[in-house]
Image (tube, rainbow, N blue to C red; front, top):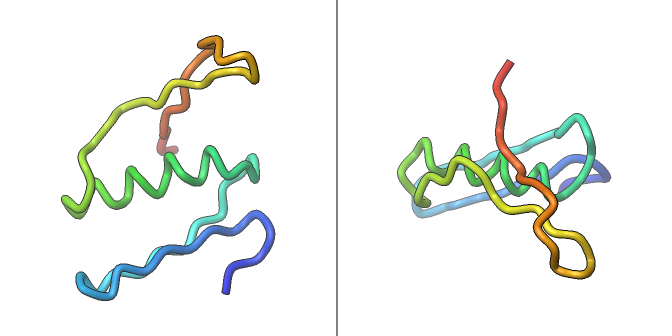
Length: 68
């Protein structure tokens, strides 16, 4: 079970389990990080950024994974 500001995913067929703690605590950042990890294993297509929109649907930026 995952708790607040921690995110988990399991893919039993691949023998993969992932647990993430994202610094900003937002699920949108965790989703981008999880997609990046899964793309490293070839499970999902790699995207370098995801569009970020406001409540009106206007494009206001992008979400990218940055490794430090």
